[in-house]
Amino acid sequence: MAIKTTQAFDDQKPGTSGLRKKVARFTLPNYLENFVQSIFDSAPELRGGTLIVGGDGRYYNDRAIQIILRMAKANGVAQVIAGQDGLLSTPAASHLIRKFGAQGGMVLSASHNPGGPDGDFGIKYNGENGGPVPESVTDAIYARSQMITEYKIVAAQPVDLSACAELFLGDMRISIIDPVTDYADLMEELFDFPAIRTLISGGFTIYFDAMHAVTGPYAKEIFSNRLGAPGEALINCKPSETFGGGHPDPGPANAKDLFAAMFGDNAPDFGAASDGDGDRNIILGKNLFVSPSDSVAVIAANAHLAPGYKGGITGVARSMPTSSALDRVAGALGVPCYETPTGWKFFGNLLDAGKITICGEESAGTSSHHVREKDGIWAVLMWLNISAARGQSVAQIMQDHWQCYGRNYYARHDYEAVDIDKAHKVMGHLRGQLDNLPGQSFGQYRVKFADSFTYTDPIDGSVSDNQGLRVGFDNGSRFVMRLSGTGTVGATLRLYGEVLETAKDRLDLAPEDVLAELFTIARKLTDVHALTGRDEPSLMT
Ligand code: VG1
Ligand code: CO
Image 1 (cartoon, rainbow, N blue to C red):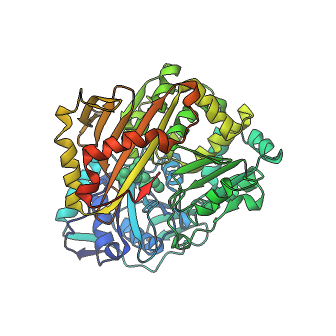
Image 2: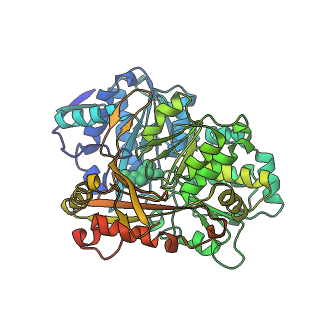
Image 3: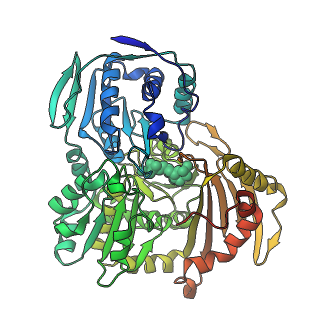
């Protein structure tokens, strides 16, 4: 075993979901090694334990895995379980950690960020519950990375990951397994596959865009082999290092083929897509995009229709900027609804403690207690199960939902790659007004509360402050501004808005019309355009 001397990098602080950087930075000598050693140093349980490793197949995935294997051996890991070809979706990795009782898992992904030599790379570290480690551990990893002086690695030839096999690196066992089978089996336990199969064979047409990312092999096995969807129902299913030159972010800007099909003539009945690492999902019906905040609410209201959830749900949770459509369902079901900061790691304790069954984020992430990550394919299957059980189209399901609970019109405006100082000025400008806003009126909007969101974890009491600025109005509307923690260029400001409508004749309006006045007020109060020098958001979802 060799001990290599190294020097610390000052920028290895994990963000909302792991460490993400430009490939050019991640491939600097010792950069990856320093971060991986900082993980081993902060997770001593990996010594003598089992580690799960896999990634979304992006550029550098293959070489990074080889480095991690050699460092795992040098750090005394007893067994590594790796996905064949180095592939594992984020939810599948979470499942494998739980299924095999592993001590942790490293997922190589920068999620929806673009890949390739000029794109992004990332590493997420998950603990023994299968979920992203809590802030106490990411803080420890960061602290370690700042004073690291050496790392451990063995010399070895590259391990052949191209076939399922049991191999050894010295005395460390490496089990290379099919990345799909265990996950697909879990899905088959949770959902009514015969009913979905009957739905599809009965002519309900589905269309799934894997965006050249990791869900391709999962979609083929589950939707085609196990559920009988025809070949043409699945597109872009071969994982590629550059995501086919695209941006694996499921939305109108990047899932162009899917949106064209779903809003075109003879649209399929059901459309869906996932992101680079398979943890996000979007759901579409004919000429209809389901807002992710609505999706998690619909899932919570209907989960009992799926066999894995037939006993009902104990509670739900949503990230703070996610709309309160979910709160309305929880209220009707008489179960608690928790509001957590952005990022899946904050759901872990609630899930482990059995306080919640379903949780989700406005950024197209939804999941349940079956794993400790958001899960794209799971959400698609849940929607198919609900459609099969209710015998309804996506549009009918949404209409029924809004009639019952009202509609939380919702949108998010992103200002990407903003100069960091300017982004902080915008936040500071709004923060400075918070104390004086309550009681002030802007047209028909009267401010009820204005604060900086602080979360106290109800299970371990840990406190996370500075999680976004919220301004709420008497009529149930709200806007939120926060800084993204996943970007790799400058700063990204996210402005989220929601307007609640309960009048039965106002449930079918264009969201941008309903939200226009709220966003005008939000832009005025944040002064985001003048302070950033931008005329408009770079992305609206
Ligand atoms: C974004 C989303 C957040 C999500 C995170 C990771 O974070 O807003 O909801 O949990 O990405 O998702 P931020 O800090 O940029 O707003 V993924 O699919 O990267 O694993
Ligand atoms: Co993702």
